[in-house]
Image (cartoon, rainbow, N blue to C red):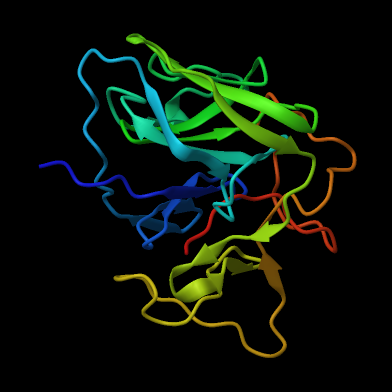
Length: 235
């Protein structure tokens, strides 16, 4: 029997790809840290066009309704993909994919960048869309979903969170600043007075200068004091 899909929240860390769920299930490829957990998703509806759930388009960090331009979006529904995959092997010359295994997403008439796909959930990067009413569609080999009406905005401040409502935080070497036993099998140390901590947040302010939206943004170290662009959380 299929189980309900769990929301997955992504974080774009330097030279890494990470995936997160509201219950702490995640995949992380931070240099020197390889933690992988399996996520159980819904079964795709065979041969049916994709459908987006009511309230199924939300901010990728806060899980509140709506879209923030150039930021993470989580889409939930049924038949959204025939398999589970991410863009790890689909980035060519730094260009982020707008189609992944035949799945594409249109936001306000513009192609989104497809990070993660599964039958019950997609994680995408929104294109540069203006604020106001907007529609979202998902297209697969089986067809295109009905338009989903939502609202876009330029900013959507929110901290990503780990289990226990801990804000996603790393040290400058990208080791996790999180209390011990948060992640099974991982040795972690909570932040302490005097530590320099990087907090991962969602669209607190516009990028300056504007980051390229169609390619990976190379980062080798945090650029203080500006918060690093990121993307996941848990509730």
